[in-house]
View 1 (cartoon, rainbow, N blue to C red):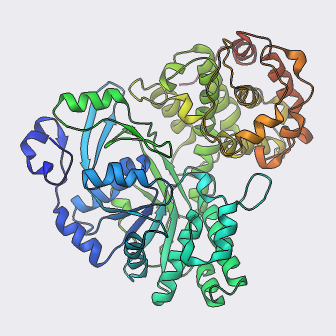
View 2: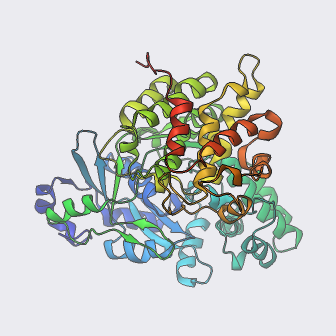
View 3: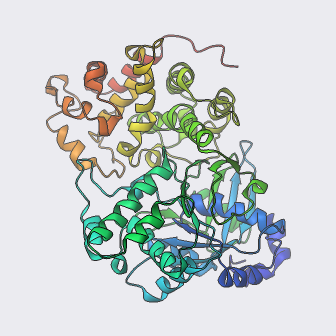
Amino acid sequence: MKLSDAGLRDRQAWEAAQVRLPGYDRDAMRAATEAAPVWVHFGAGNIFRGFIAGLQQRLLEQGLAECGIIAADTFDYDILDRIYAPHDSLTLAVGLHPDGTTGREVIASIAKGLRADSADAGQMAQLRAAFASPSLQMVSFTITEKGYALTTLSGQLQDVAAADMAAGPAAARHAMSMVAALMYERYCAGAWPVALVSMDNCSRNGEKLRGSVLAVVHAWAERGLVPAAFVSYMKDETRVSFLWSMIDKITPRPDARIAAALEADGIEDMAPIVTSRNTFIAPFVNAEVPQYLVIEDRFPNGRPRLEQAGVYLTDRQTVNRAERMKVSTCLNPLHTALAVFGCLLGYDSIAAEMQDPDLKRLVERIGYDEGLPVATDPGILSPTAFLHEVIDQRLPNPFIPDTPQRIATDTSMKVPIRFGETIKAYAASESLRVMDLTAIPLAIAAWLRYLLGVDDAGQPMPVSDDPQLPALQAELEGIVWSDPASYHGQLRGVLCQPALFGANLCRLGLSEKIERVFVQMLAGPGAVRAALKQSCGAEEQEGRA
């Protein structure tokens, strides 16, 4: 069996392999999408294919939608050429249950995948036509937090962003410039309303999207490359809304064991690949079953009936509270702590880390003891219940093939929110003391120790991709993993950067605590484990039910 339009005609074979097939006319869906597109999505990777595209599939199957989604990518065209094209934009979604069983479903709601590449006239013509259509209701994004950044950590414009701002809409290359260029197409076609919806796993995602797109638009207007009226259109949220959202679904890299199981059941060509941009991807997406999406309900041109697919549609305040609950206290900080410690301690599975008593106590301390006291309650989800599910069910799921190495990617972009928000909340509190924090400073120290590229056994260790990695490692120059005396205050310049931690840790007094633990971790083999035990292993963590 092949995952393709032609291959799906043998429904009996697919059903024998326990794969659920779409229950709607895909040709009719594609025709409707071509005639009157409703939804364009930027970021063609796993979270989109395994979660967001599945939402539209639910609506199509219920007869609540006619169109599919047009997927676009500005970063990794190999995804489209090597995964989308050979499989007719179909995805095999594999849900991983804690008991080891899997659910299998073909997601067929992606009408087509397109390169958002100014050098590709044919693909861009199709994207421009979609944006010029009055029917377009929403443009969504899963491009990772760094996809929105126009500047470096030092505040300088990235070279590609500066070039785009000088060149104008026709030559856009950066993702934010591309969005601005396509919105200019929409403006010229009739200034139709539309919602731009960031679904990325970062704080105030809609605000980040709006700020970056408008920065490009203003730069073009200042150079006379677009009219002032276009700026007014883009700033008018009754016509162009930038919506906030909270998204949650653990979608790890495709696992070779899942590929082997699928091929053993007769499904061909399932092997994962690594693209030229270092994306791990396969014709299938393996992911946990729990999923959450909360979106601000301000769609100026109407919207798909997403609430019928399990999406929470609400106001911005509730979205912000849900996002803060998850990203700042109840999930993401735990994930990042496990990532850096897992790499240092030689783990290759998040689930295996949760069987380590020291690491389990660490995440319980971060979540229950340090996070919950400042967690925001969105009302639609209980922070305590959410945290219980994360610690007791989701992170320990042995059938989620997620690795600390994947989660450690881009940590410098995550620290200000995942740890910084809690630090700031403690600093602002009248009843909590920032110096009482123990687990979060420990996790920050472990991240800085991780940047040395040597594990706790003294073996060289690859450090995951991070846009600030060269600058950070330069700050740590001269520090030897096995020699505490090699530390001469090199971290102070890093710890005083509010842009990196969300607050100036030197002014708050946390820098000295972090430095002490960091120096402890330089005592040679086993020093990271010893620091972990000393900081989080003394007290029993009871009464969590």
